[in-house]
Every structure is written in structure tokens, then in C-alpha cells.
Length: 263
Image 1 (cartoon, rainbow, N blue to C red):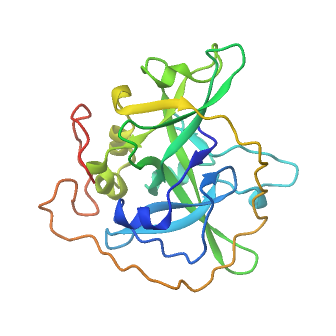
Image 2 (tube, helix red, strand yellow; image 1 turned 180 degrees about the horizontal axis):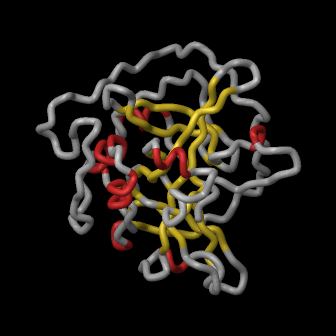
């Protein structure tokens, strides 16, 4: 499972994912639990919308006193059953989590080492997730998200990570041509067709030891919103002639064996 990853900057969200991030505040490059990070959803018109939210489905400030939960990942096998996620999954609140790399522990040597996993062509990619909103004490609304994972015991690359006797898990990478199909899917069972392992030959992994500089603690409350100095107005074309663009209620099954297309 992934509990730490590298996200993308605002301009990459706009240029690569065709999604402006409406929040005025900035975010860190390397994301840990309870850090704010960008994610992508469909709005009511079936257009991509960028939001900023808490990495971890249940933020620490919303946990019951004395209770600790780790909700950066949700297992696809039980996401529709566990009380933490089942309502959101039933409501098909699906999202994409932009990333440049995720980190996993490699135990192939006597001492484990942090490795980064990204695209073989070094391009950004999007991880499948679910999201929700929270009512804050000051009357504002905040968002949070988690990444979906699948079994990777037989995957050519992802089986190399985690302890030897542990189950191997992997995040789900959504193909660029499937972004809008995934975001617009309103049938939870049909959404499971997208929860597949990404081909190992299209990924690249390398040792990425942690920096010696200690990471800063995340804020205890959501960052204050400030006016954005520049608004990026991009709207997804309504034409269905392009691959991967369908009415917001659609949910199309696709072959998982073809090479991924550019956005």
C-alpha cells in the first residue's frame, strides 16, 4: 500500500490533466498523511474539477478521541463493506489522484529501502480514489480522499515490495483514455472493471531513500482559503467524438491490454 507519494504542481494539473485547481492555497510536493493535495472529480455537468483535500479519508481532526486510523488506502475488495467507505463507494464519489511517483518499501536486501514507482516515460499519472466532504467547526467545508488498492502478489514489479510474508498490494493507475469514464461511472459494480493492475513493463522503479530533512507536521486545521491570483478557465469539450469522453452517467468497459494513449 502507498502512504507517501509525489504529487504534481498546479500547472501540470492544467496542462496534463486538463484540470484547473480552484483552490487558492498551495500544497507540498511530497505528500504524507493529513497533508493537503490536489485530486480530480467530475462536477454536476460532467466536467473535470480540481479540488484540494486531505490525504487520508478520515482526517485526524475528525477521529474520535483516543482512536487512530490509517485511511490513506482503501482495499478494493472491501471498500463497499467497511463503514468508513461503503456509503461513499455506493454514491460513486470517484476521483483521480495525480502523482509523479508513489513510494513503497523494498525488502529484497537485509535492510528495507524506500523505492519510488513511476511511469517508464516519466510522465504524470493518476491513481484511482474515492473522496468525501466534511463540515468544519468554523462553518466551512473541507474534502478528503483515499487511494484504492488491489492485490499484487503476481505482478511483475509490485510483488517486489513490502515484507516477504506480507500480501503484496498496489494502487490502481487509471489509463489516460479512461479518466472521464472512471470519474463519470455511477454504478459501483461497473466501476470495479477499472480496478486493474497496470502493466509492469510500463512502470519504472528505483531506490529513493528519504531525505535527511525532517518533514514538517501537517496543519491541525484546513488551510485558510485565499483569493487565487490567476483563474484558469478550461472546460472539457462536450463532443463525444474523442476517445474516453462520454455522458457523465456512462461507464464503459475497455480493454486493459492496449498501450495507454496520451490524455
